[in-house]
Amino acid sequence: MGKVNQFTPDDHKIVTSAVSLAEKTTDGEIVTIVTGESDHYGDVAWAISGLVALTALLVISLFPEKYLYIVDWMTGGWSGISALPYWALFIFAALKFFGTRLILIWKPLLYFLIPSPIKKARVRKRAISLFRVSTDHRTVGRTGILLYLSMREHRAEIVADSAIVDKVEPAIWGEAMVGMIDLVRAGKPGEGMAEAVRQMGIVLSEHFPKSDQNPNELPDRLIEL
Image 1: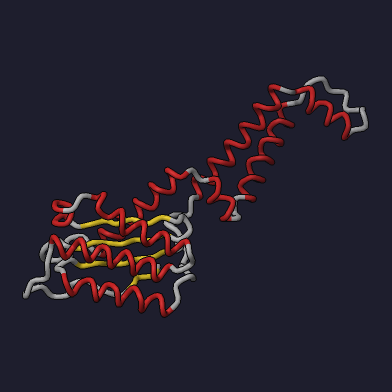
Image 2: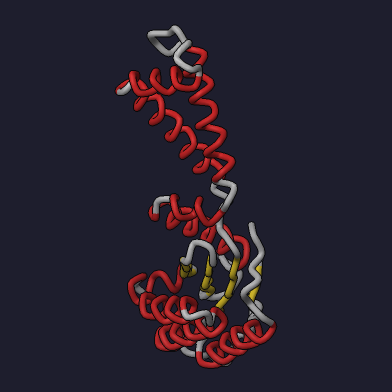
């Protein structure tokens, strides 16, 4: 996955400080992870290329006379064909297929074409995978929670351990998400994540107030992948 370059050392300090401050009032353990992208979407690029090639063949089948006219024009009117041969169709489709795939190496165009539900699902899948590695069942009270931000998709996810899921409805985290995304869009990703952490801390302190026998079990620092 692509490494983020929008986060400065100061951003890391802002997020780490926000986590430390939030955890002073709760037994909840907040983990923050940011990445450049959640998936390379190579399969999607190949699928789009195939769709373009098939669409091109469909257009030829619907309007063959236009393409025969182009062939005649290119040969000076000496083509002598009344129908496009199969090998010409194959070459045309192959050019469309591999040409499109080559163009889609340019990531901004690829991400523009990827349907939103696919990006949402990939970001969610990546967040859950990272949660299982970094947070799941790593606290005594099952009070770990992950804040995950994927920059290129412009999406974020909050994934919580079992004790938090039992007490907090997923919709509650919406306010934290809104505050973060607004600041990220404004070019302040560090402040955005810090604001989300602050909102998460308020919720966690209500359901899991700080107890005397609760060590700091997970790292406070921002993890950048």
